[in-house]
Image (tube, rainbow, N blue to C red; front, side, top):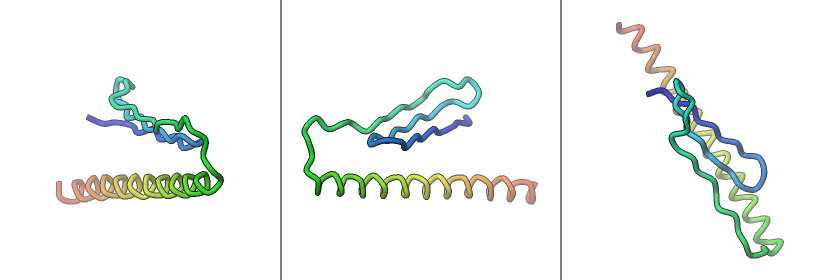
Length: 80
């Protein structure tokens, strides 16, 4: 099954949607829970750094997955 992964990272709550590429139906949806209690300035800075780290990790993992797929498809055409 082919799929599309939508990862909007705007605002303080990152989310993820994995959709079936043919039917466009959502197969998986996730959103980071919001905090109800107020945060101190130090906690806000730490949370912002963790968010930035998570975004970088997500982009890195998507890049590696895309590269792997690209290389496998090229290798398949060379061997086939």
